[in-house]
Length: 442
Image (cartoon, rainbow, N blue to C red; front, top):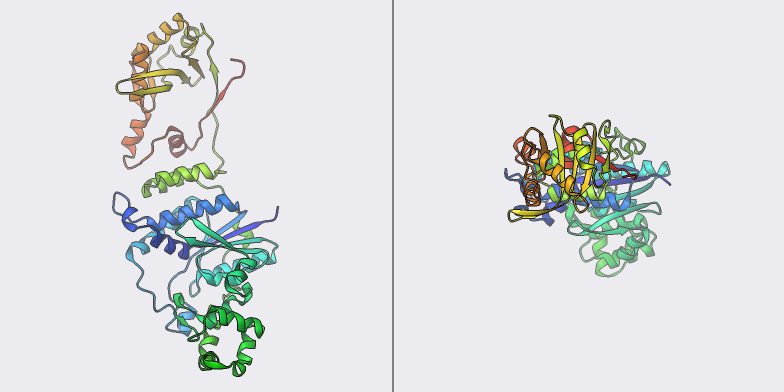
């Protein structure tokens, strides 16, 4: 499988997300705006899921002051002042990237497009397949048989793959001619005025007829009519535009494509960052669609859970749960409105774990469990205990000796969290993953 490098234009995508998602609908309880962070992270998750890159990086602009604005003071001067609600979110996006161990690259005096152009050029030389996710059409000039631009069309979810055929179909010229087309018609977003009265259709026609912009300029005196006259009057603007929209593809950067191999992301740090941003749903999507490759310390945490056959419960309790050591209890069932139903009960100690199917217990098993649950001298630990205790009591096994509710403990430790799922808590605080294996031999 060839190496596949995915490059994202961080500033472009974040800005698009900011205006696609209403800022008033995305903020933390402390008032921090999060719409740009949310939208950017959502796009990142989707493209990682869909493209499965082997190498990955995000490029950012450093500031509006670049060599282009030094050469042409009006470059991007038509853009309004960056909203303060947006500026404060760029550092948060970088925190998300740090947690996901995604490198980001920037170069003072240059734009994110130049960084992407340099990395894409290097990657092509090293036989990579290249994917560029950007909302800036200047990136279309990089498209070729092994480089595709993934261009957001609407909001933060609809993307279009701009291949050589797609660029030519949309603009009437191949990708390498796109910046020449833009030089003729102008680029409003960059405040680069084009030739008045000349639209995309005529510009593409000229580029095809005269084999590129140099040919158009060389034959400008042969182009008749008002459009030809307008072209000749604005040749200086056209040449300036072409100079400014050319990407710099030979920057000296601290990282090369080979340095950008996808890294296992830090699940504990992801929890910390997503908790602070209050991204509960987005975190669920992340864990559902992407697999962390983090090496998790499993020592002492994988245990065999044995199903106790009818008649075995009293003996197991005597052997494993008759001391004053804490016993973890997990209840499978349903509960509401002060009652409930128990389908199965799992018990775990440091010495072993077992579970009981409540539909198969004997009267002796039932009595043994009732006595053990009711004994205050037998310390018990449950997670989010209220519902399970209702179900156990309805079964005839009221609980005494509850010494810890781990969900309540987590809440007291971090009341700002939105999720207190037990599996997530073990990863966040213990850096371990709970793994239970059911024995095949009963």
